[in-house]
Picture 1 (cartoon, rainbow, N blue to C red):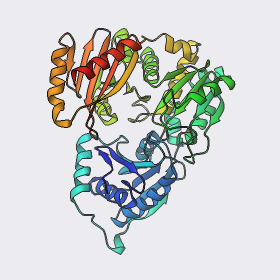
Picture 2: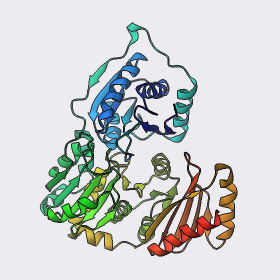
Picture 3: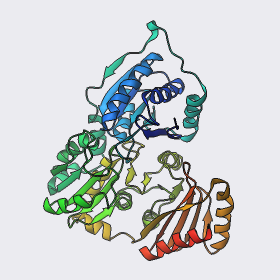
Picture 4: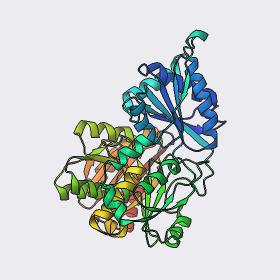
Length: 445
C-alpha cells in the first residue's frame, strides 16, 4: 500500500487506501510519544470518515496511556483556541482541508495552539516511521472525556478584536456558505452575535459537500447568484475545516481568497501598526499596503507553520497566506476564516462602505499558476538557469526561486509529491502573469 502524503505538520490520504485506522493510530501515537504530559484534544471536520478515524485515534491514544478530550466537529482554528483553553498537551485535527470527500487527514497542533512547526514535526515523522508503538498495561490506560462547549472560547476571542456595537448597528445581511463543513458550527453564531441577518448554505455539518470543497471561483459559481438572490451585503465561503475564506460582493462578483488577506491587512493597519508576515506565494497587495502604512512586510516560506514562525520572530501584528487564511495572533496562531469575517465586517462598518469598495481600493494585480514537468534531479540546475535568464529580476531562494520586478513576480517551487515545478506569477494583467509562467515553462524545457 502506498504511503499517505506526509508533511511536517500532518498527513492526508484516501480513506481505505493510503489512510486507514492503522495509519492514523500509528501517527497519533508518534505525536503522543513526543508531546508534553497531559490530555490530547481531538477535533474533526465534518467528513463522515472523520468519526471512524476519531474513534480509532481515541482508542489508540488511550492504549498508549494518554487521556483524550473529544470536542467533536470543530474548525481547525477552533482546535487551536481550545487546546490552550483546556490546557491540553496538544491536539489532532482530523481533516483533509480542501481535498475531495474521499480524502481525510491528521493535522497536528501543539500545546501553544498552533500547527506544529517544522523541527518537532520532523521528529514526529521520524517516530512514526522508525519507532514501535509503546502500548501500556491495562492499569495504565488513558480515559476519555467530552468537551461540553467547544466553541465559546473561540467566539469570545474573535469578538474581542472588533467593535461589536458598531457592526451590530449596520445590520448587515450575510450569505455564509459553509458547504456542510465544520464552519457551520461557529459561523452562524458569530454572525448572529454581530447582529447580521444570515442566509446559510450547507448548514448541516455532515460532510455532504454541495460543491467541490476548495473555495475557488469555479467551484463557487452557483453561490455567486445566491448572494445576489439573498440581497446580501457580502458572501463568505469557507473550506471544510474553516481555516480559509473566500469573499463575494453584493453584485455576485468573486473577490477570491487573495483579497481576504489583503483587505484584513488594510483594516488592521489602519488601527494598529506593526510588522506583517505573508508567505512568498501571496499577492503583492499586502506588500504594497505595508509600504503605504510604513511597516515592514516579512516574507515566509510557503506553509502555515513557516508563516507563524516568522510572525513570532518578528512580533507581527497580523499575518497569513493568500489562500484566504488570515492569522490574528490576538485570537490564535492558525489561519482563521472567522477572523476574516469579523475583520471585514468591522472594516465595512467603520468606513461605512461596501465590501466591493474595500476590494477596489486595493492595488490591482492578477495571478497565473501552472505546473511544469521537471524531474527532481534536474530542479536545482533548472532554477539556476532560470535565474540567469531573468537577470534583471531580484532573486530570492527562501522557498524555491522567487524573481521580483517592480510590478510583478514569479515563484517556482518543486513539488514534494510529483516530478513537477509549480509556477506562480503575479502582474498588473492576466496576460502579463500568464506570459511569465509561459516564459518559465519554455526556459525549463
